[in-house]
Length: 166
Figure 1 (cartoon, rainbow, N blue to C red):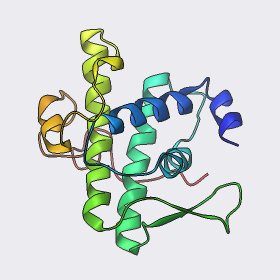
Figure 2: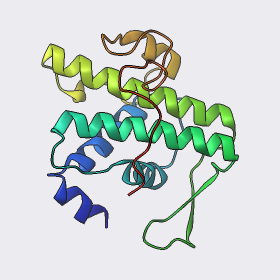
Figure 3: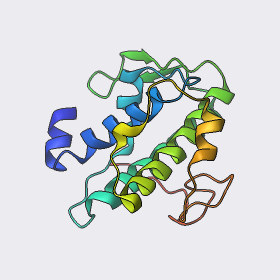
Figure 4: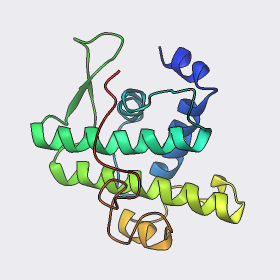
């Protein structure tokens, strides 16, 4: 399913997963499991032909934040269902609401890093693995799109909190 969705989107789903996991691995205090993160991004990613590459990634990150907020509101964040087998529950590695909120902050950081790399024509490989706390790394990246101390949605730039439930 993942491969099919990624192929339909010209690997945009695979790319956002790789970028997100690389940045997650650059932060020493986030413990979300890779499979759970891939499933969350899979569920948040909706391919639309009229979106360009960057817009698809922004929408995936926006949808991820909405879904994470829903997980917090429902108090259902320790396990996520496998899209291939709905009754198969995958442990997320998230133990409390604060860890889910850190994942929302990480999602915002991913967008800031993408923006910084695009504007400065740099590659993501410049981030060292496990080198800073999330709060410290977040301070290192500013955004012309997202105001300081805001998230992708609360910054208001990308519009409301609607999720495309395909």
